[in-house]
Length: 154
Image (tube, rainbow, N blue to C red; front, side, top):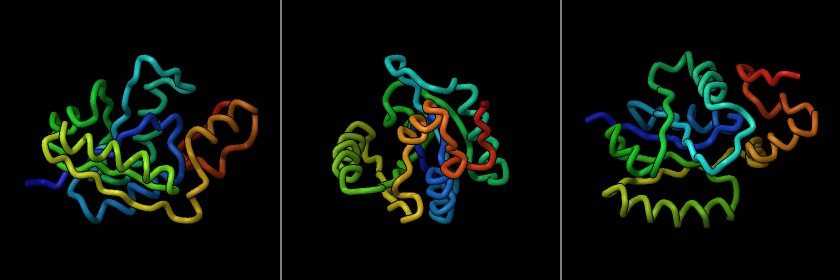
């Protein structure tokens, strides 16, 4: 059976930290699905189409990475694509506290869905999509936090 992991997120926008995490996780899995979660209650800076386009461009040289989107519970999405693993990155202790609780709930809802945590490399631990969005909204230069494939219109 294929070892499939889902790396869920809003990726609004994808950052160099996200790309690094997927790249580092590839040796552990046969396939990683980078899945954009759609939450109708959330306001995004970039359209779903734009985020998917960027994700596909970032991973176009990785045949074992697939890009998708989903609505509803992440655990249910994982079941629908036969993924037994969730991939999550941890930047700090706050991330761990939050992610630990979510992983325990996902294991129950997802019928044994395992969450695999990778700790961010120090060079990326200060980067979050939230901070990058604020830089972009403030007309700052966020290029050092974004993969080369992500071009933000001026």
